Image (tube, rainbow, N blue to C red; front, top):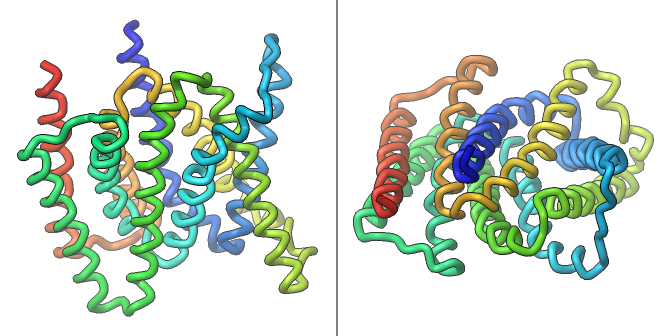
Length: 302
C-alpha cells in the first residue's frame, strides 16, 4: 500500500472520530464544567499514551530540547483548539459548530500558502469566499433569535478552527524532524498538565476541590469522557500527525468537511437538534465552496 493511501485512510478515520466528538462534548458538558471536562479528557489521554510508551519494546528518547521545540505547537493544539472548542460547544449546538468548522480547510490553505508556499488559484479564492459567506449567513440568521451570547460561541468555535489550521500546517513542518508518536506524546502530556492546572485553580478559587472527580459518579459521563480522551484526543492526534507525514497540509485540511457532515448528522439524529431553512442554505454554500476547493486542489496535481 502506498504511503499516500495510508495517509488518506488515517485522515478519513481521524475526521470521522472528530465528527462524533462534538456530540460527546455536548453530552459530557451536562455533567461537568468545561475546564474540568478538558482536564479529565487529557488526563485519560495522558494515562493511555504513557501506558502505550511503557509497553513499547523499543526505548523512546525525549529531551528537553524536543519539548521546547514542540511547545509552540502544543499551545495551538491541544490547548487553544480544545479550550475554544469546549467553551464554544457550551454555548452553541454541535450542529452549528460543525458548520463553522467547515471553513477550517480554507483557513489551512491560506496559512499553508503563507508558511509552506502551497498555492491558491483565483477559482479557489472565489470558492473560499463562497464558503465564508455561508458561515457568515448562518451566524447572522442564528443571531436574530438566539441573542448576543451566541456570537461569543461562534467566535470561540472560529478561533478553535483557526487553531486547528495552524496546528495542521506547523505539524507538517515538524513531522520531518519528529516521529508521529513523539509529537503526540509531548502534545498530550502538555495538554494534560495545562488543563489540570486551570481546573485546580478554578476549584481552589471556588472552594470546590472535592468536586473534581464528581462527574465520574454519573454513568452518562463515563463513556463520553473515555471516547473524548482516548479516541478523540489521543488517537486523532496520532492519525493526524501520521497523515501529515504522508500528505500535504492543504490536502489534510480538506478532510475537515467529513467531520462537518458527521457532526451535523450526529447532532440531528442523536441530540435531536434542528436544522432550519437558513442553515440548509448556508451548508450548501459551505459545501459547494469547500468541495469545489478540494476538487481544484486535486486537479493541480494531475
